[in-house]
Length: 138
Image (cartoon, rainbow, N blue to C red; front, top):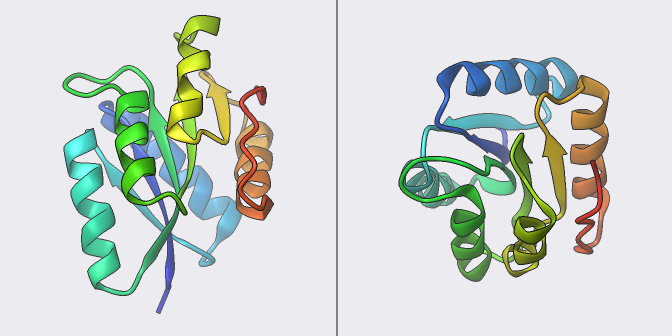
């Protein structure tokens, strides 16, 4: 049984389907790939996975979502579960928004539309890092 998970959060189901397919293609059975349509669902899913002894190692979240923005969600998640690596994926970020991401322990930012090679390299880099955030990755 898989013991590590990557969680993708986006309010657009088509984006979630796309990223999930790409991650499954690249990582095969190395990780359980889970998805959530908003921050509340994602937070509950992290807790639920933990009760099943599945460790969430990475959360990839869209920045602009209704309800709670991705950066706000990741700040909350980082406070509760600082061991989880985090990545923002967005088409709308500015330098001002990126400065605030340090509080979320953000490891990287991927711009939409992403390139598969960039996505894989960013994730591999996050998972290999010893906890050092790299806010400048694009």
